[in-house]
Image 1 (tube, rainbow, N blue to C red):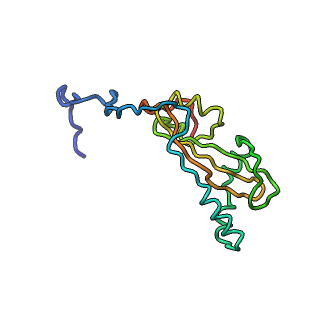
Image 2: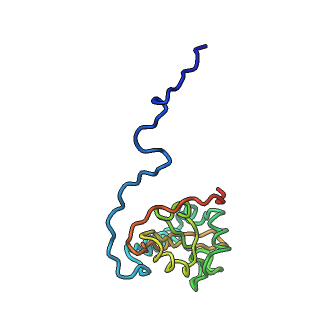
Image 3: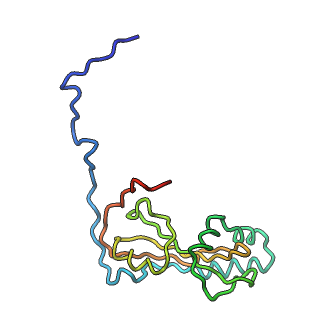
Length: 170
């Protein structure tokens, strides 16, 4: 067995930036945004939704299987955090659709991918530079789910991602 090396004072010195000191790349320039709480880059998926509904009503079993198979986590989010709409479900027509709103963005850090209420979005728009909002309609009765729209919010000033709080459970 080889003998362990002795470390001299010179060899143990770290050259360059220390690992504990974060080296950040410069942030991109700020984007001019007139109203941070006003949606921009809106993508409406109404035409795709209409096409899928027509396929299902025409008897396409594969389309029904793809769009009436809500994930259990999505159903739970719809039950506990969803916002009721006045639109009936296009499949079962027995239940009212619920909108579940998700937020995603690099600046959100570990909070990206969370469900938020529509009342929280304007507050977040002034706290973050840019993030995407995805609205999914869900029927908890038959499992219908479809992405309704997506858009960007934020004040346009880039920020570093939020750090993971020490008490955050994965």
